[in-house]
Image (cartoon, rainbow, N blue to C red; front, side, top):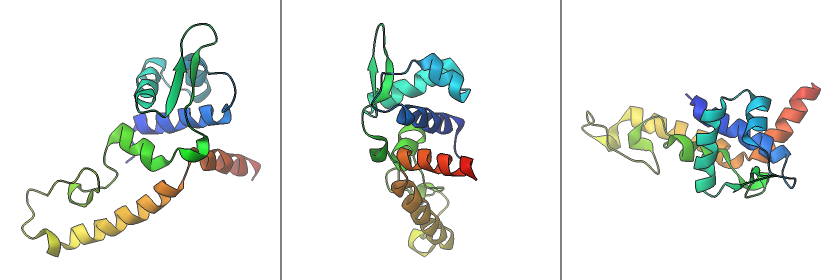
Length: 144
């Protein structure tokens, strides 16, 4: 299940994506717009700034802005940064692999094989979905 922290990170990126190319946004404005607790949002934005996704400016007119175009920020990148592995089992993770303690023959495990397929399908969507695409999708859905 997607953590609340990751969901808030994506929502904040969407706000900043809609504001891309304009003045930095203050945390308070992002928090109010998306109904995210301010202190929690501060931690999330700092984490994304440290990873190079966001830029921050201090002082008057300061705040946060995207360090990359919304088209260049993908859900898989955000999810891994905030929550770590995307895979549902440690033995199928590409970046955070660990063998399962109870597993005797990993290569012959039907559970593992099935969840590799699940991981691959999820990654295809997450690797191909940018913040810009989410913003556009929301616009389309609001017209329906």
